[in-house]
Length: 260
Image (tube, rainbow, N blue to C red; front, side):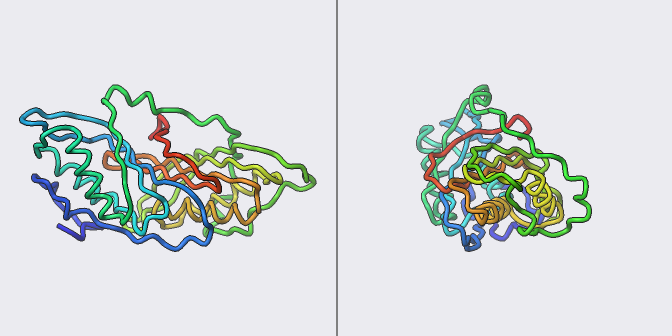
C-alpha cells in the first residue's frame, strides 16, 4: 500500500505498517532544536477482544532524516483498529517502532484518555500581530519584508501571536490554517513587517514542517538573542501537526489549541 501520497486509498482493515510513507526533510540552513508534535484523535486498538480508544501525541525530532506523510499516518493508525495486542504497552511500542523506522529517528507516543484532552489544551497569551490589509498584493514569501522596529534599539522579550497563518498543501493545493507563536529576545522586531511577511505564505505550497522551518530561519536572520517559533496547525483527518523550533534545547510539549 506504499505510495499513498495524493492517491485515493481505502482504509486498511488489518495491521499495515507498510503504508507509512516518509518525506525527506529539506536541509535547513538554520541550526535549531525542536520537535514535530502530532496530535492523534482517532487512536484505537484491541486488548484481547476489547476495543480501547485514546487521544495521543507523537514526538518526531526536528532533525530526523524524514518525517511521515500525514495521510499515510492516518491510514496506518486506523489499520490498528481491529488489531489485538497483549497489552497497552505492546501497542505503544509497536507504533513507536514503526514510525521510528519511517522517520529514521526515535519517535515517542504518549496516550491520554479521551476525556483528558483538556489537560493539554492551552491558548496563546501573546501580543496579537496586526492584520495586513495589503496581503493580496503579497503573493510570494519575502524575508526582505522583516525589519526591526525603527528607533527602538533596546532589547525586548516578546511573545507574538498570529491566528492568520495560511499555506497550501503541496499535493492537493488545499488551504491549511494554523496559529503561529513567536517568542524572542533581542532588538525589537516590527510587528507590521511580520504580518506582511506571513501574508506571503497564503499562496505558498509547503508542508507544515517546511513552513515553520522557513519562518524560523528568516526570523533568525534578524539576529535575535533567542528565538522560538511554533506552528499550531488545525487538524485534518483526525490528526494535527505542531512543529516547534528553537535556538535553545526544549523538551517535548503536548500543548494544543482549542481550534486544533
